[in-house]
Amino acid sequence: MKMPKAPPAFERVLRDIKDPDRLMQIITLSAKTSRPGKYLHWDELQYHTPPEGFSREEWWLALKLKRKQQSSAVPFTDAKGKLFTYGMVDPIPEMFHKIDQGAGGHIGMPDQITNPETRDWYCVNSLIQEAITSSQLEGAATTRGVAKEMIRTQRRPRDKSEQMILNNFQSMQHIGALKDEPLSKDRVFDLHRIIMAKTLESDAAAGRFRLPDERIVVGDMYGEVFHNPPPAEQLEERMAATCDFANGKIPEGFFHPVIRSIVLHFWLAYDHPFVDGNGRVARALFYWSMLRHGYWLFEFVSISQILLKAPAKYGRAFLYTETDDNDLTYFILQQLGVIDRAVKGLHEYIERKTAQLRAIESRLHGITVLNHRQQALISNALRHPQQRYLFRSHQMSHNVAYQTARTDLLDLEQRGLLTSRKVGRTWHFTPVADLERKLTRLD
Image 1 (tube, helix red, strand yellow):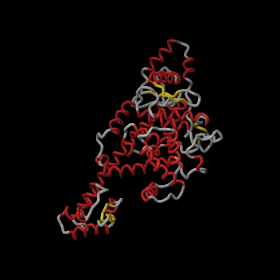
Image 2 (cartoon, one colour):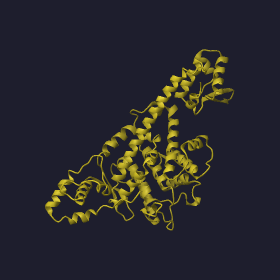
Image 3 (cartoon, helix red, strand yellow):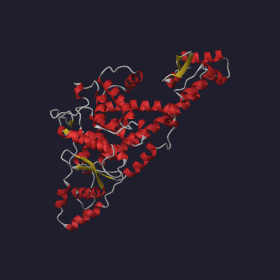
Image 4 (cartoon, helix red, strand yellow):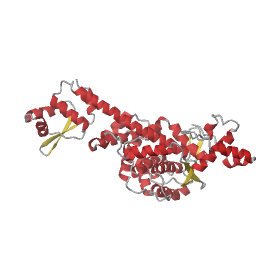
């Protein structure tokens, strides 16, 4: 990624227009410059042909005039005290409507998500996915299979990459528990400690602001600096403002919750208050804000897996905002696109799992090593992975002798499809975690 070209200063371009008639032509052009779905930065505008009779700078001036008419300020300033703004441009209102309908209610939600017996499995799977991809965005180099095995078996991490992923998983669990609590500096510090546990050279750097002598910049391996965060001396005051914004104390009046969540994400990343882990904390706070505002589907959505596919676009959205008069519209549009793809990805994943489930249930009837009673039990177990089965319950369900029921369940356990434990004097059988995979190996 390279630093985008900074736009010409709006005031300078406006000042250079000496002819009032020419200025009126540019103002007229500004009313015709709407391009749905496109919000071009000066860096991109150079690859487009300006309207006939206008220079590229005049075209840029027309765009900026239109954008300034649509812009609103947020209570967030850069290190020099200049406010950030955003514009309610197309397709932002439409995307808000889609998120409000699809992530805050139960419209069109599949049974696996709304069913209490299966939603936990999907929630944990999503937490694992987010933990892995969020860590990979920051340089973790562990495969998904190994990371999932580590988390599901609860074994200790073998290296820093695995520790990063485990930390992220635990932080996402923490966010779920924290969603009903107001944000405070101490809670942000606690979150940072979880995210950075056992990954810093000194644990003392976790859960505190970076110090004045800890110079932190965002750059590349070649030494180019993309972002120079506010000085450490400002962080206390800036964090207080961050928390006030997150908790809805500022600004006054209605401020759309999705905008608030996205701006909170940007704000933490812009301030870069910690020596490391700022991106992971920023994304975690985005989740906290969405869940706090009732977008419950975000328990199951992973935005980092979308960001990981195009990390340069993520970084460029930050840079476009910072280089173009603190215009957050670039970042908001990019994040709304990520949210849209992540929600669609969740639905596609559930559709695939549902199709796989139906295929496995259909195949059950062809597995001759299982009798019809065992097939019925396994079919039920696929849809109710937390279900417990007893000798007596199986006996009553199929009106067979106790010994027949006992033989059925013990045989399923021997084949690796059920696991058992004794509670008092009664044996309880539950489906194994990888039941679908085990079934594919049965003859």
